Length: 117
Length: 114
Figure 1: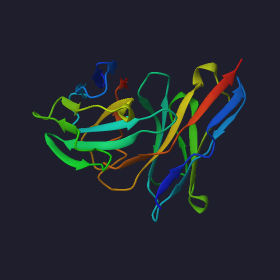
Figure 2: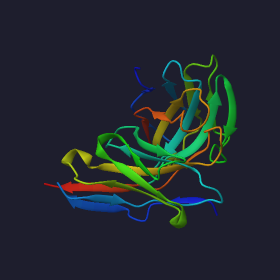
Figure 3: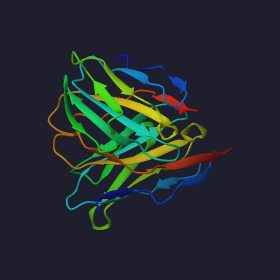
Figure 4: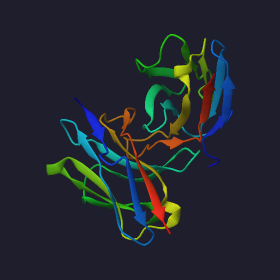
């Protein structure tokens, strides 16, 4: 179990630029989640994949945000035309197949901290 | 409205003292309940989880939590806090049986005095 890996750890970008983050889940985990966390808040759900299928998207995920998991393994989250309000920690989590939530708790990566100047 | 609340934004305790962090939820049915801990600059680590059975559940690092249905609460406790416990603590609920809809509370920041 090498854990959930996220790259980069930090990203500073200028407003209007595009950014892409990568998440490598734990290898046997078929579920993958993206969350956003702002200072002093808990993580907020963005989107969820089961294998390669994106099954749920939050209304927080504007048209500028897109996530993919093309082969059911790693995932990317792209933000186009970044805005200062996009500055946050972007967390990826994965979970294994199971009978329910107790069998499949979330395993989090260390996150990518985005700063938009 | 459905929600998870953690009434205490910041708690400070002395090392060796006992700790209780509060969590309340507002859902029609008993959800699946979790506590996670986040150290600075790190992701979240699962401390413990609960859905049914014994209402006192043990977790890692000496933490335990008690579910009280009448109060819609799932408070986290530790008898003796260590300096390394200083972190942010998040209560979370899952309200669907497939485990895909985790909702997190706003968190409680714990500081530990030497």
